[in-house]
Image (cartoon, rainbow, N blue to C red; front, side, top):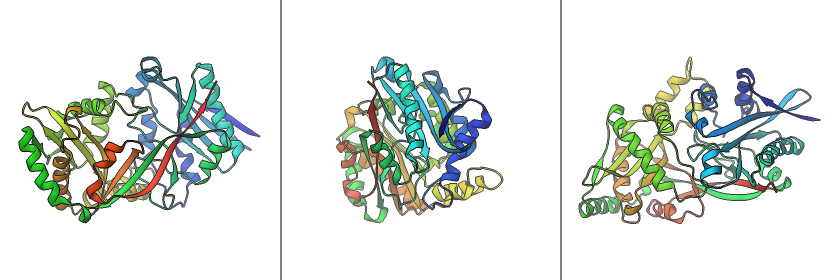
Length: 373
């Protein structure tokens, strides 16, 4: 008998966050989150996303033991303004027992029907800034701090319960030595001159801060046409600024300005913290913080987190300026490998920008959907 229990208190929420530590214990590819950061992201007093979103958290128990978890999420902007009657679900984990996964997903479906929503889709978070998708290929590769990892049996469970892939994503990597950087360097100079653009790099975090709001405003604009996009608010921007920007090496953030000093393109990358997070084991103290600081300084892999280009400058070669700037930074820091975070498989425009990097597709993932009517 499977019991699904809604959790409300901090003690139980901690159990929700730490369940994967048991499920993936000794798995060499799973990358744990920082427990405190995960708890903060679920706290309405801390995370401003709860101004327009709700989440309910559930644990599945079998003989009194925790065997699964799921978050049922609704985003009011998506439902009311975009008219997408979607019940989101995320942070989905379970043992290899179809009765467990069924009970968790049925609980989400029940809420969706009560809210008169049309379908459920996941795993996904509150917005495009969160992790997304079930891993469908590439289980033998190390995860990252910006993706969920899961066992292969998750796919079988979703299909058995009547779900089908809704959105498919690719993850890739490339070696810096394989990039045709001479071509990009020449092209970057031509494009900058043609459109009167100014590339900007940073050496101090405090110099990045004045640009952050405009970067995320451009993020909202440049990503707005993607399926499942939900814009982030000013308060969320302030939240992400405090949470992430100060910790990213400033040399891994680039912007391009037009002649009026307006940001028309940006790129945010970060050193890979995967191995450091595995060593930290979910805790910053007493030693986890040291592992992260070492990775920030010494990692030879970099994750391409976000790239945004103003619509009027798309397909005009502006990415050459961004990549030229990053290559200079990677030379300084000895970065040898770039990792491209999940990109929609049907977003051919974004995939084209990597053509001259000889990318290797090494993972696939998908969100899964089921109608509720």
